[in-house]
Image (cartoon, rainbow, N blue to C red; front, top):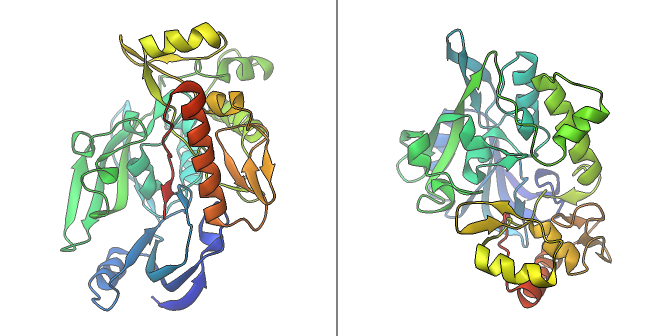
Amino acid sequence: MHILQNISLKSYNTFGIDVNAKYFVSVSNIDELTDILSRKEYTQKLILGGGSNMLLTKDFDGLVIHINFKGIDIVSENEDIVYVKANAGENWHEFVVWCIKNNFGGIENLSLIPGNVGTAPIQNIGAYGVELQDVFDSCEAISVKDMQMKTFSKKACNFGYRNSVFKQEAKGDFIITSVIFKLTKHSHKLHINYGSISSELEAMKIDNPSIKDVSNAVIAIRERKLPNPKVIGNSGSFFKNPIISKNHFNQLYQNFNDIPSYPVNDEEVKVPAGWLIEKAGFKGKRFGDYGVHKNQALVLVNYGNAKGEDILNLAKLLQRTVKRLFDISIEAEVNIL
């Protein structure tokens, strides 16, 4: 374990924002993490996983701790269910691929989501009708204050839409070190009716899809709609899809009869933030080195050497415009630092 100084974080965040960390260390096990957390000389600490859900707007005048725990193990299994433990530093998509190769079902719809396993529960990542909470059993996390390990059950995580206890009352208090997933071994319950998965499978001439087929369909859709962070800097979906009352939706429908919605409960619906941004005229709009992606208005992009502050100002412009046009507040899904 080596502590480095004045390190660029450009390669550690998917937006590709070039800011510096005064100190930087990568830890690969619990002992190293406990050691570095206990050092009092570093008063400011920032935990960094895959760097996929953050927008860095300035240099960090403290210690960045990169969580690099590796390893995937089967904890227990029976004829129908398998419990798989993945350490926090595992790349999320590579973990999905590993599960599919072993015919473990449940997370195939979450293929190609950027980031690492350890940050997935924080955000309760989701896509195409599936959320992490659907396959989550428990996670282990270490307390930043006293370095004690704690196990969080699904109930304790208090999952919500792109939300969890780790983004609310326990924000900044724990570092997730591993996650246990409850997956199926056969008779997989496929979710293919959300978005365009069914039509993608039809185009692939697949009538009886496997979990690998569903994963391939999701990958194909995402690759068409979303830019590869290795090519164009981005963090995936920048905003959450807002939830509004049915009354509000009905009022909007009078002027925008093409507005899509998804039922949440008897009184509320979810409206795609990407549709709102596109309707406001920002889809594909470029401002020098940054802008809104041409295929998906929910994605803000860094075309080259944009500053985090540039992208943040664009996000604020989108929020103001959507609020003015639709009286809807769209909330950032990414963490802004």
